[in-house]
Image (cartoon, rainbow, N blue to C red; front, side, top):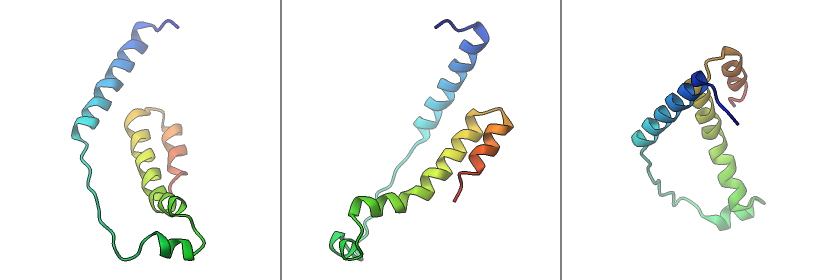
Length: 85
């Protein structure tokens, strides 16, 4: 695949921006001890499924933020908005 100079510049700029975001990334660990996997299982849900349900809204918000950063086409950003819960 050959990229023209404009596309190479765009890829380079996007890479630099992504690296900048990664450099700013921080994470936190939350300890939740109100109930454990046994309680979740009594509700008929696997612990993995439970965590997927918990994290899904956050994943959608992150996707929207990334679309706003990396997409200059407003139609794509609008499509990402429809992914919000």
